[in-house]
Image 1 (cartoon, rainbow, N blue to C red):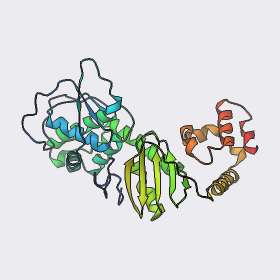
Image 2 (image 1 turned 90 degrees about the vertical axis):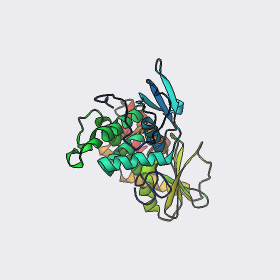
Image 3 (image 1 turned 135 degrees about the horizontal axis):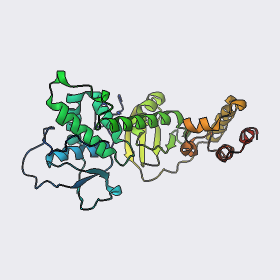
Length: 322
């Protein structure tokens, strides 16, 4: 599963208590991560690594690249693999200990900021994210790792480097999406006192926002369901965990939920300034792909406003009054 500190996995990667370019020279990998030695069979010259889509799975695959002395061309989730002509594949099993050893190596050579950049980039939905993180780790361990610590440049300051730039860009996109989730998640109270929010982010950011909401809900139980990645974050008594979910559970709203939703919508309408209505700016800061799970935007009137604005009608703002 995705990294958590209090429940195993990567410490400091979003836990309940805290939280590309080509290689300059594509040479045969060396065991810079203290990989176990011994005969592993002939290295595959043109290979793609398939993993389970989690951060731990990707870091396990990177570790195994050192074990097998291979230089994989691609990293894919199992269900999204499209082989190139003549390309073979290797399925990598997730091993938390291997992933933690990669983490320790990155922190030792580049510091915790370097590890966090790789971790955040691994949560991206970009199909090239796995390969970008692999090249980034290879650069840090095989190039910078051979230099004295006093001679190592700041890794994340090398934004023009072909192995650093893609990871920095992916990290920025993922953190921006996590920020949107903190702004636009809307919780509904279910029978039994559980608060539930549903979201559809374009990156696997639930591990990055659970600390934020856990600190605000305190001991109040809540759950955040990511309907795109089928991940649910569950918090109880101030501690949280992640789980896989095939579908959203059908839980009935409590008796007062509809009244509270209407009250929130009334507040939203009363706080708006009609003469400053700017649909293009709103879509920039509040993407329409998120509207279906935002209480004040999922009402029929809000959809009518959005559709009128998208069609370029000059009187779209008049819908606000009606």
